[in-house]
Length: 67
Image (cartoon, rainbow, N blue to C red; front, side, top):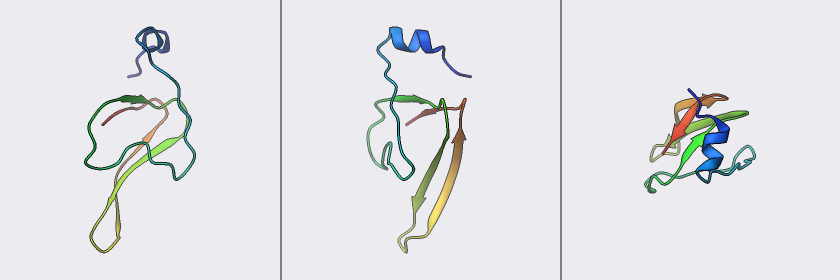
């Protein structure tokens, strides 16, 4: 469930745009923000010691994402 944009902005929310391949946050960083996906998709993944990717989840428009 999305939080209304008006309510988010009232509490200081900003809109950020990311390009494919951008990192929004990285492993072992503090949880400082709440993300609400308006358009596009976000892939949550990590890599093993050999560099093999493991996709944990794919979030789409309408999904909340908190780190």
